[in-house]
Amino acid sequence: MLAAGAHVTTNVTVGRHVQVNVGAVVSHDSVIGDHATLSPGVLVNGSVHVGEGVFLGTGAVVTPGRTIGRWAVIGAGAVVIRDVPEGINRDRGARSLDLRAAAIARS
Image (cartoon, rainbow, N blue to C red; front, side):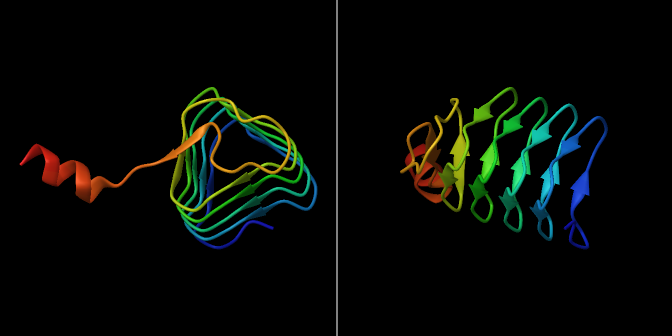
């Protein structure tokens, strides 16, 4: 299912029974496995491989060239900066950024 307002760019392979929700973006040369769910506002940058059954929480960002293993769960607002192994995942390979704290620290 591709929701209104979702964007899928060029050369993207999307599996069966995939949900790409409102405001989610899947960039070039990416692969989305069967039964994956991309919540609203998810950004999947170029050349990413999202495995079967993966859940990406609202506003999660996957940096270019990453692989997310089968059935992994990425929390809302996480930034994936490393490959994520398969299975249930508790932020291993992903990091939440508090942009307000970073702005205050720079002041």
